Image (cartoon, rainbow, N blue to C red; front, top):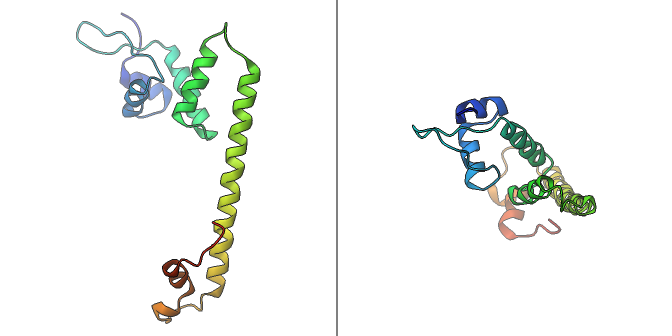
Length: 140
């Protein structure tokens, strides 16, 4: 039986062995055939699948979203590029919301640190602790 062991696959894909196992459990990669001694023997194409998964994660897609993308990309007959476009457009909207929230968080923290008088201030006079304790932070 030819193929790659899980260790070889992980090394070739530049991921941890546990990552390969996790992707297999989540159904992102197919369960490979086993040798008589029980070793998994992955086809070499799985390297590309794992690299695809890692690149999609780098773009902010969740594993569930990646599973859908893989399913669509692996089915040539029912693949519709407009669905991929809509999917990516929705991800852009989600990222924009996250950016907006992060910018708000940064603004609030900048404001609080600007109000902070520095060292030797009692806890009850520290604007950061006071705002966190009293729940005065808005728009985050």
